[in-house]
Length: 310
Image (tube, rainbow, N blue to C red; front, side, top):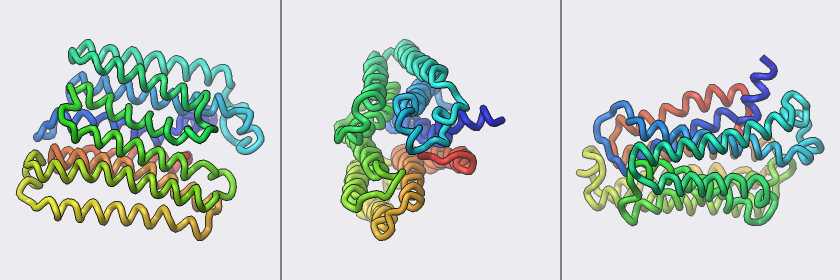
């Protein structure tokens, strides 16, 4: 049981629900199914590719950080010796390879070769972040790129992006996750107020891009039926309230930037990815699909009770 829990913590298993939400929502935005049903094989292959590459990033992150963790976080699975560094490296590299194979399988099933290019780019971005960029000023940008590409795995599996406005979603989610990464940069110690504020601003800007695409979908008449008859201004107001609430929560730790408070905020920001994805899916495909994506909060919350998400 101890070894199993160590692997769950190394993989940061609760966070994998956000990877599923990203790829699934990306597929939904382009495919636009209006009736809830079992996704096709191509969607599951794309989700598998995204999951494997996300898991690889989590494992290889700790492999590359093992010396630092021995000093700052000795309780983690690798520095504590519960999992061997060599074993973790082998598993991480195997997950990278499996993710690439599943991406190729998705392209073969769908006839969309762009999936291969995106999964290859995501593999390179994961390696770049873990091995080289993480400790540099470009670290948040590299992490944001990983999240943008995860969205594009789902979108290309459905043959997209098919409209210029759809590019706003991966761009916005990349900025949001880049902001989370910047926000969490000093979470092991006492965070600096300017870094927290910059991360909060980046998250709000990213959400604004996603909101713009969602509102545009309503304005253009391409939204799900329950939204198509509503004024775009009302939907914009919903997004404004959501962005305001999330931003207020992110600014509060400026008063007390202690590790516990900052880490809790980071965990909530990660969890919010599922809610954001669900709203985007609901905009295009309707309430049923929005609820289906939102249900991914269940494994996230269950897993979060076992291991921290950051």
